[in-house]
Image (cartoon, rainbow, N blue to C red; front, side, top):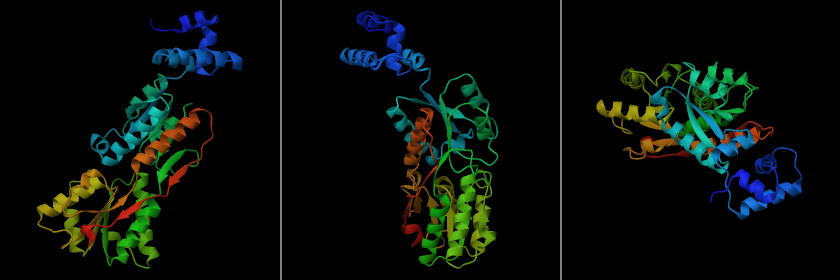
Amino acid sequence: MGHTLDSIAKELGMSKTTVSRAISGKGRISEETRRKVNEYIKEINYSPSAVARSLAANRTFNVGLVFPADSALGEMPYFQTLMTGVCDRAIDFEYDVLIILADNDGILPLKHAVQNKKIDAVIVSRCEKDSKVINFLKQCDIPYIVVGNPMDPEVPYVDHDNEGATSRMIETLIDAGIKKMALIGGGENINVTLSRLQGFKNGFKNKGLPVDESLIFLNMHKSVRLDSVLKEALSEGAECIVCMDDMLCNSVLNCLHNDGISVPEDVKLCSFYDSNLLSTSKPSVTSLYFDAKKLGALGLELLMRNLDGESIANQTLKDFNIQMRDSTT
């Protein structure tokens, strides 16, 4: 026969409320009573149902993970790997992850989840300028954390050192003899794009070289101009195409192949993230590796600590790897 709070209370000669408080860890009961209840439920191998556990703890045991509503962006390896890190770490806290699609084009799903108390806390997977998602969360009484530096001292976040890592990548390419590079990146409304752009410029500055602003092409994540942009970059003498993510790099590889342009013979190529998307590329692609899974796990852990009342500090992961491969030889 299955055990219930009623049967446990009857067996121990306690009220159902006392047993519930002992299991949840909340409410005013003696340590002796709490110990007695916990020893008994361990002895009978009792595990409260999700509903009972939720009611006892006054929590849903769900955390919301906000993804951009654009399905093409959601399919990026970065977001998939980040989600894996969040979900894996959530298991350790006995939490489930609810995917919520919201961005500056609309935040209604997030509003519903928060206002209907479907979630206990929120992780925002992407940091936009003037973010409607973040502005909404700042007004709510719910713990949240942002993946990416929001450039706002009031907003808690975790991030990679995108600026520093990009600078080091550019310096490494310059040391390899590559002096003229074209940068292809995503939306200027995304903070990570701006951080990497600054890192790109810093890399040249640190080596005492000028940056050719005419070879910087942003807002390319939905661009149908990629082929013409590549032709422009090559006509201007770009020795290397630097792509801000692997999806862009994969598109660049396809365009170059279709135009009969060889890598690295005609132009060199490098990318960010070093995801499986490029694992079978020929030639192998030089990449700046960030551990998005580790970042997601860290974000979830900090969020859980904050949910339990702990004050948390923003964290920036400094670890990254530059994988020099055939595409820049």
